[in-house]
Length: 243
Ligand code: CTP
Ligand code: MG
Image 1 (cartoon, rainbow, N blue to C red):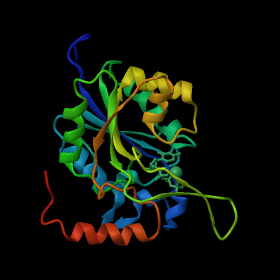
Image 2 (image 1 turned 90 degrees about the horizontal axis):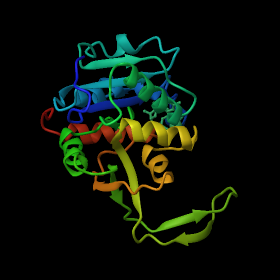
Image 3 (image 1 turned 90 degrees about the vertical axis):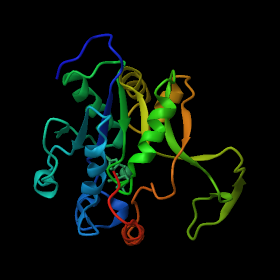
């Protein structure tokens, strides 16, 4: 890939896909569980392949992943990258993916959009909304939704009981993609350590205030067993694959 150092920032995708999906209870890693006849991650990657504003997208796989190429044979060509550099936590997988992007010539000022493989109902217009909101931003930002329900803090007994009601005002639920510059994100994740659950929290810990950009309820992360049936019902209501 050729580029000009100091030229305008480019956009890259990074899809962590190295988890095991314990909560979903699927037979094998949830990213390969069938959703409307195709592996979950095939849905996710179809969107990234179609986003032509994005120079390339890197899928981060587990080091012992032996089925990606067979499960997603469409993922090939100069804009479709993969690397078996996943770690023990999501943050480690993302950090390793960012290092791989740097090796492949992505510059510190280029934008990276990190998106969970498990959010397979992504629509390109939501990614474009994030890109246009953050493209001129100092820090970057993320898709998120204002919390609608009243929030309860549970104690640790079983069955669960309420300890407290948490004020809902001003609370947002974070989604992905999350869009930050490669250099800032690498520094933020290195400082935050392996347990952070999203990119924004690592960037916030450096004192920055990422933009909150409206996401969509359908952009949920398939997490629990029932989420596959729910996602299939939603896919059935979409007329045709959008572009
Ligand atoms: N992920 C990853 N590397 C890890 C853990 C998670 O790349 N060590 C990825 C998952 O593949 C997923 C995304 O991060 O696309 C969001 O994580 P999550 O939904 O929590 O998936 P899992 O960790 O696989 O599921 P669980 O937490 O239920 O085990
Ligand atoms: Mg997890």
